[in-house]
Length: 397
Ligand code: PLP
Image 1 (cartoon, rainbow, N blue to C red):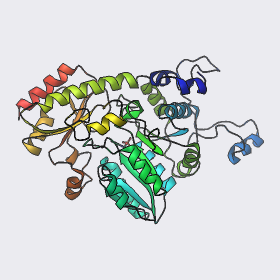
Image 2: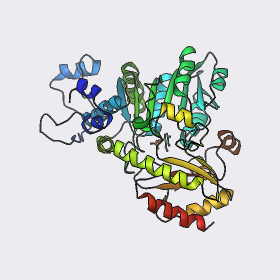
Image 3: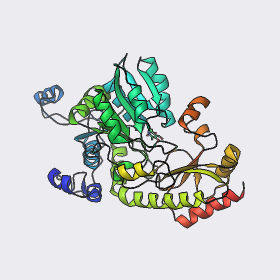
Image 4: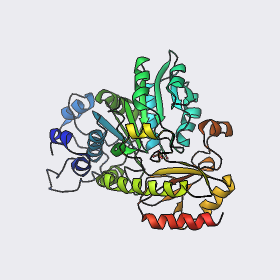
């Protein structure tokens, strides 16, 4: 399909055909893996023209590769951006965006509820290079407005956030950012472009841990940045060139393969998560359940306004607190006790001691991450089997 045809095509069609279609030189239907570190020049003049930017083409896989290119094109269509950059991991995507935008003396406003690795990067590594980070409650627009200073370059948030599923109003936050000459960066890992398209709602940059739903099978690590062509050119030509966090052609290919089934998987993840959340919300041993697709979720209306579905992540607190949560994690049989998320397999974990162990006790409290909170990445298994597994594990508490 041509880029013009793809722009008009439905989401699922782009997932299947967005990588460029049949390979013109060989007729290969699946996108080939261009497993080459370097690309030959026709002559020295061409080499010089490629290096100076006078001519477009491939030089060296850290700077670009046809398999990476196919993934980038498809993701820019899916997120409704002008261009995309595929990198080695979600953390490589976050660090590449921040290092492209900001330098010593600048301020970043970030959410107080983020993946633990992102929080650690902001708190420790950015501090070392003189970037100030203010972590605040980004679900409250007044708090965001209050925290701007004349050095603030960007707002960074996850919505829904890991692990509490807290939301931020993307449209409102983008308006505040733009009024203050800052950009809004959204980590769209939990929702995926199938359920939420932040650029369409006014955000400037989207990042993904593609390790999660984009790949979808728990067998690869990757990250993607989607934004304007000018931002992506700068990120690729400066930050990726210098810091080197490129994705391998094989990992890019695995992400392309994952994308083909993204809508089908997300429908099932979401269906299973809602059923599991409903089951837990009526269970006598459950104190509180967090899932934006439940009408009892305090931000259900916002979720329904800016998302077209609610995703596969749930978290909850048991009445027996942390000890009960740990017993539950040790008692499941079908679910796997492991971090990461977005896999076909259901994964269960204890954020305070695992994915969010980089938070101090005060930071956990500020983020609303209860010491007993349990997070489930609901997979695509049969829902009755998942409920039966949780039910037998809950009986052991
Ligand atoms: N963003 C979110 C929401 C995550 O959950 C994670 C990892 O769990 C990351 C970013 C980092 O991604 P990666 O592990 O691919 O570096």
